Length: 468
Image (cartoon, rainbow, N blue to C red):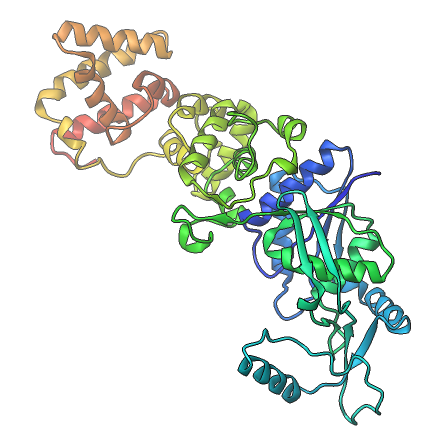
């Protein structure tokens, strides 16, 4: 049997991390078994589905690198197929038209609740023989079995049994002709020959209904695996109040896709004590049966740690291209200044995100506006002669390299009887406007001689009280 999995999001908003994890698990399972991964857009909710949300899903999948083999399929393009299958069920006596009005359904619900029964459709039109009432457009309901059990051998939760008596005759086609979720999912899974359904466990209660429809169609049910939800750090369902939950917002905040994938695969799944997985390792080692039954808690700090790890490991050329884009978003032109590949190296160890790296890289491509007030204390009459001497020597330094700059600064410190930090810090403030930067020798090397001298002239003028 050739494995066929699918990811079937509804385009009613952005792709959140829970959906991304489900997509990842489905993708990994298909790749591990050399199968087919399908993307299906379940857009039958015409009021809430939007083209913008569809685009956000496609963009997120592309950014994550979860390439699909088939699709994207759109349910709204298959309405005739759903109507055809509904007619087949009607003809076979496995579905029926229901003419109950809203008022009748509400009265039915009220009576059941008064008897402390579970509200459900009571099958009033199931075997109705009298003429339909005039002016009422019927819905189509599926004839759910009245007895017996539905057994789901779930790959994560194990054996789950549902009593058919607890399931009512669900609507498969609404009065306006639109098909319902549980029906379209079954038709699509059958038509697309889906063998394994990996989805959130909020769908577990839908599964017996879908299996019954499949059996009525004479189809073979897929293997199911229902993935537990993701919780926030406070143990509650992950939501916007916990911070970022949209996949593309992580891109905006400077995360690498491999870091998010690595983090998501470890949310509820593990392989020994291993924390860092390449995509190839994920494919090799992932087994959906090893996913925990309990919900996993999202830990933003661990994701940040992984992101920094991947920034350190990323190929310089790729990172340079990404950094250029993030600098552009800040309004910084990186075309005039040091090569981005050179800028990246001293910033790798200091940056947890690419946004953080871009903010630190700004100093190499634009002048700072003002000295940090807390740092300006290093620009004093006492440091003036020190900075003047550094300027004099920088002007004639033959080898403008980081090692040569470091050696020269160390010599000045030794001659002045000062520790290196007492020289480097005023120099750093003069060059960068603050007390934080990459190593000052590397920073000045990237600045170049001309800009370094201009920065020192500006600092000396500041000390003298002149306008800068």
